[in-house]
Amino acid sequence: MTIAEQLEEIGRQKGFREGRKDVHDEGQKTEALRIANNMLSSGLDKQQIVQLTGLTAEELAHIEH
Image (cartoon, rainbow, N blue to C red; front, side):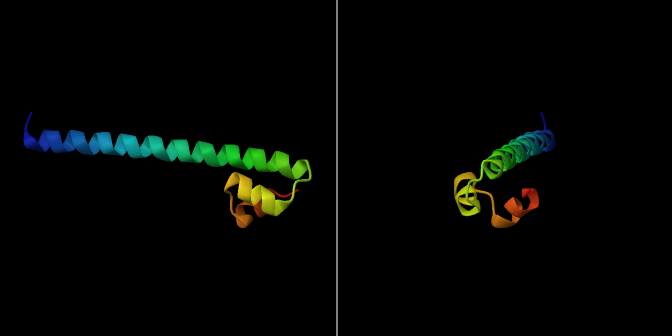
């Protein structure tokens, strides 16, 4: 394998790892929003929801009922 091929493979592997991380992060955000929505429906205080889920107040405002 040439140096160019090795570098290309390293770049491909790095891109794959970064892509997986992005998908994982997006899945976690989706789950946090789902949980926050349930918390809001249960009447939990908005500040507590922000603290417990790690969402921002702005993100929480987007899903408020």
